[in-house]
Amino acid sequence: MGSFFDDLFKSIFKPSEKSPVKVKENFVIKKSELSDLAEWLESEEYVNFLALIYKNYHFKRAGIDVHPQVHILDSPYANGFAVTYAEPFDQISFSRIFLALSQRILALGYEQVSLDRKFEEINDQVKMTEKFYFKPPLQIPIEGELISQLYGNVTLEKVSVDNKPSFIKLLASVYSDRLYQEAKPFDQLMDRIFEKNSDG
Figure 1 (cartoon, rainbow, N blue to C red):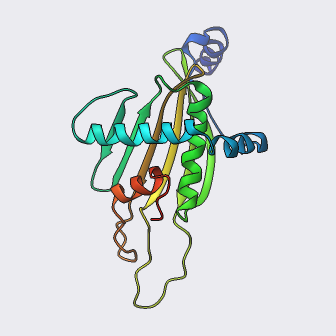
Figure 2 (tube, rainbow, N blue to C red):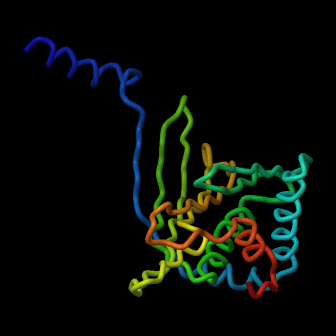
């Protein structure tokens, strides 16, 4: 019994020894944010920022580091990129880019499965991760035909530390199931997301 009360007193009187906070919640984008986004998608700033990220992605592929920096994630079952928060972005435009990319993914025929927000306490800092999760549309299997997985499952994250944006990350994870066609190339996904007038 003594150890139970010892643990209880420690948790009350020694908060420094408590477990780090972790909270996860679902949320929805406000209508006001969506109408602001629709207006921004018609702006020159949107076109320029999309082109900048796409250009820096290709620079990184060629081994050239430029700002804002883009990181490439490359493995047999998952491919993606992350763009760091830096000038010329500000907090508002970075959030708009995050939402704009989600709209581009939906436009490719994906379905949004979830949108959640996770708070984690790490080394006296609060990390917040906002995450969209997208899947290819559900299809009824046709005998003798494999199911299209498009580019695989797609996750889109925006990470902030102590309320300051850190990076946006997009990751496409492919199915290795024999019921599915081979995933389309990740480079094609990048082309379709970032080329403003691409018809796929």
